Image 1: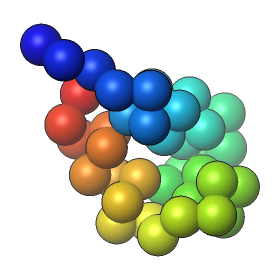
Image 2: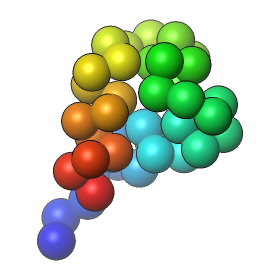
Image 3: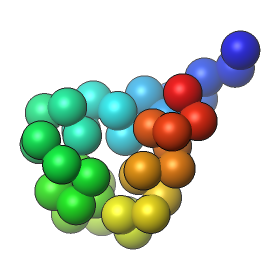
Image 4: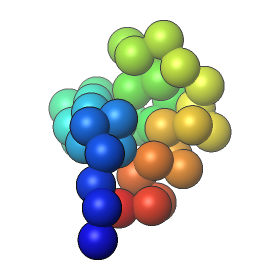
Length: 41
């Protein structure tokens, strides 16, 4: 299993922010990209 830094960053931001939308705003990325990264973990 390969885990990228972007996937981990998305996971931590989501856990910290409490939602994919809030994590996306924090990271300056699309919500769909954040949820995809977390789903691929």
